[in-house]
Length: 456
Ligand SMILES: [Zn+2]
Image 1 (cartoon, helix red, strand yellow):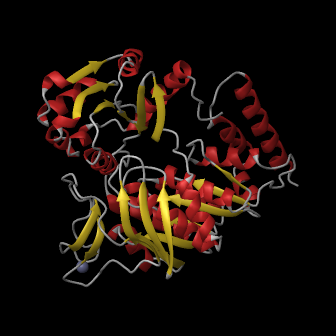
Image 2 (tube, helix red, strand yellow):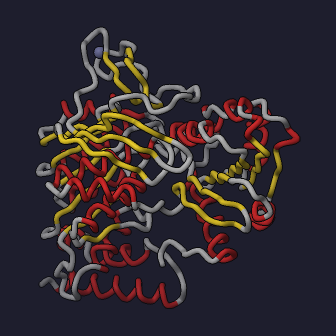
Image 3 (cartoon, protein in one colour):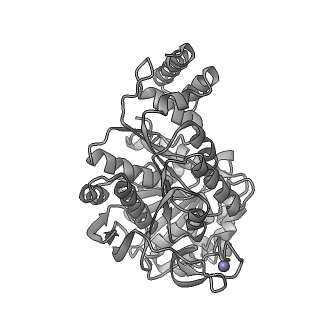
């Protein structure tokens, strides 16, 4: 064994231990220490581990969690970067935490959630057996703001993963186009019928054909630019998915019921998480199980006992109020939350916490691309809406422009006061924070209402 690898592993394990002792949940530092000592430590540790990488713009965390549940239920031992540390340092630290002091892996598999930019690099160090791409949407965190840039990052990541089977969302015209760009074995998945009765008005992130720039025609849209598209000019069209939600039976405030068709074999699936976009997450998790040759019955039933991830439809009792926390980070994701909320039938309270720190994206102009007007249309179901976070006033202003009665908009500059107000409600509350707002709020909820922190 290389001395540098041994030193890197020891230093990383020590740093991790030390940070825990002093009560810090830092996830970047230990990995950074290790890669400083031995830059190729990840490649060294990952070479004998079957690796699954989940990438794409939206839905990575939830999908990775669903896959985790599937792997556990199928008896596969694995490590995962579940703390949301989806950059190289976090992944490295996770591999080190799951190896012996001499660098021997303790787990047979690894499940890596990676953003598109990091995936480009991840593929250089690990040799994934499987890559799952959820979708490609415009994200305000993308410095170039171009979906083609994101798509190109994923393409490079796949090129760095020549042995991987690649699972692609057939319903995303951008994602599906990757099949023509790479030589890997491809498995398409999708949703074969519309999900929502009522949808928000969304700007499509990909209205024009990726090949010839003609406008796509759709047989149906599930959400955003996802659906059954075809280009009337060059003929590029949605490929037939091998694994699909063949029927959407129910999609309500608590869960979805679907029929999954995996290469002709049919299963009834219950997805224990509301929101139509979670149907995609569920189908993609089953696709991974299918591609890995796992027991599909177990994979499907894992979806029904799956528990919500950190800040992703996560449920709490805050005082009397049954509360769900739903991370928002870009127009497409936020519109999907609104699609979900506009199909909820009970009278509810909403809260949006908008920050503009680096991890949220400094530019908050994306809030003008979200169809918040739909909230004004559901005035009879909206008790009131709270705004908070660094840019509370801007989001409040956005709601005013959306046509929401100003008397129904309440500003809370302080999260403690926001939680106090929520705790007195006896109706459902939906909190939608951006990333750093979620981290702060989630920590406060842990402290005040006794929920676990993510690293515990
Ligand atoms: Zn075309």
